[in-house]
Image 1: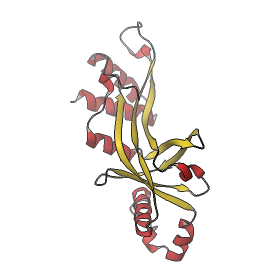
Image 2 (image 1 turned 90 degrees about the horizontal axis):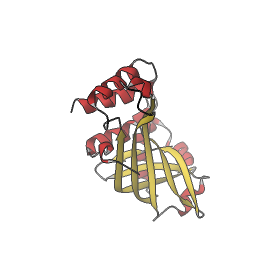
Image 3 (image 1 turned 135 degrees about the vertical axis):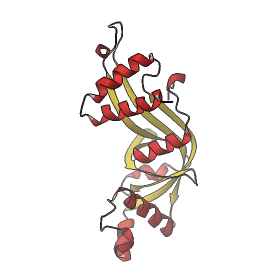
Amino acid sequence: MYIPKHFQLNDKEMIYDFIEKYSFATLFSHHKGEPYATHLPLTLNKGENALYGHFARPNEQWKDIENQQILVVFQGPHCYISPSWYETMKAVPTWNYVSIHIYGKMEIVEDRKVIFDSLNEMVNKYERQDSPYNLSNIDRDFLDRMNKGIVAFKIKITNIEAKAKLSQNHPMERQELIIKHLEDTSNQDNLQVAAQMKKNLQK
């Protein structure tokens, strides 16, 4: 990923928080000699420096993915930035965004306990705290039948590239103008980009 120095994100905890918050990712590999992508949720295990997830078994991307260098992209908030918001018209439009690229090697997981723990962690993450649904309460025979329809995997992270393009290459006064315009909206991406920009200015 092209990352000018203004936009490079190096704070590992911030990167991990971002991955956990925007965990619906795009997983790229080569399948049958062609680029191939699957969109899926992933969970991060910091202790193992790894991502866990699963394919639907009919998705044949898993069949030739082991030992490849794969790419996982986590895309966060993004929005259009109008030059009309600046103090001058001698400017051009741009786009602000945060994106994390993870490189790694995948291994297919066969261990039933590891698969269950991975699925359980994912369910618990997204279910509401007061939800009655929990994999621990589901009939194990039923779960075993359902698990035959997936292929679980672990991605050992080998490299991380992180980019936060948030107008850091502009003067502070201009960044404040951008934040003001982004906050004057109900669009969630705009508001989240504005919040990230505010954090940068407070450093």
